[in-house]
Image (cartoon, rainbow, N blue to C red; front, side, top):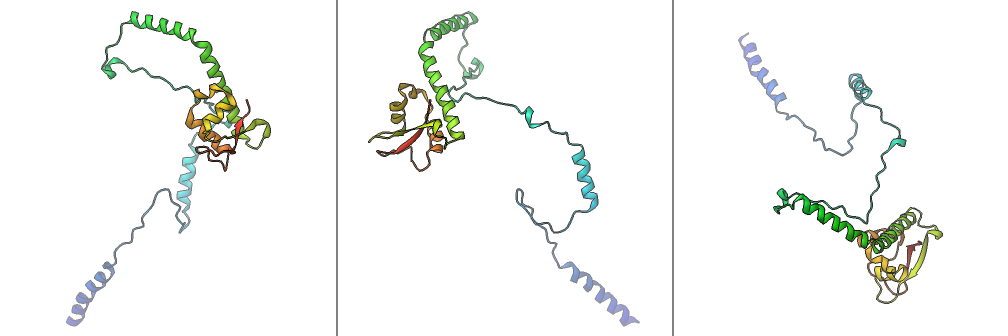
Length: 198
């Protein structure tokens, strides 16, 4: 009997230490990556998801989407207060006088500004139409580059001096999207460039 108890006391801890040597395996979860489904979720989990989804608000139709328009040719100007810039703010009378003088100058210079702005608007509209349907021949005309021409020399020869007010990066990237196979940053003599028909 004594040997039986001795064998139990010696063997019993050995059983527990044999099971305890295995380290637990932890799975690393990576976000934004698909993982294989190893087992189906149980019904309680699915019921929990159903109750959460039932509380979600119903989204409105796509007809009521917000339509945001942006003028890519006009940069918004923000005036910071004197407390931020460290400069003294002018009095209200001086501001009013400056604004009225600025308005008079703007009105005097408006005719020339309007023609450049009108050309920019027409060009942007025609360019967006061309981007939406680049194979439509009625939306573009083809201009041929001369020796030493860059894109804006070509555009100036095609449209006139109004091209100088166009934003360079926008025009370059938009025209590159409709002129596959032509490197607009480095034009060679004889390159055919599709430009919008205005």
